[in-house]
Length: 124
Image 1 (cartoon, rainbow, N blue to C red):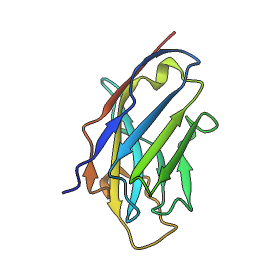
Image 2 (cartoon, one colour):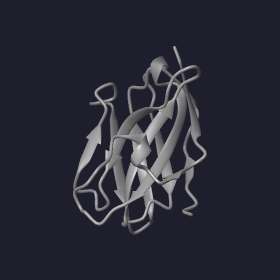
Image 3 (cartoon, rainbow, N blue to C red):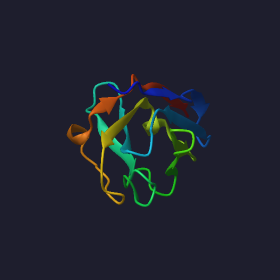
């Protein structure tokens, strides 16, 4: 079991920025960010390969969100800019062990470990 801890969620106004952190996202893991709004299914937001060589973000956040990681700190990040009310959700970090440097995963079912989530609320 890998103890994931997300942080950085907050309430902000539209147009604002937040940076989410995911502690324990070490170099052996692909990291993904997902989100779930009330009454909706969990959706993919972004993913990064274990060494940061490959990243992929959902079309809905492209150009606004950036995923990154610092393996020296075993921490991953989701920088969120130009936030919109529709970004309001509980954001989850997830990890999948990988032996491939360039591999990423977009499907939540591919991830082995999940955090408890951090709430992001964007008001108009």
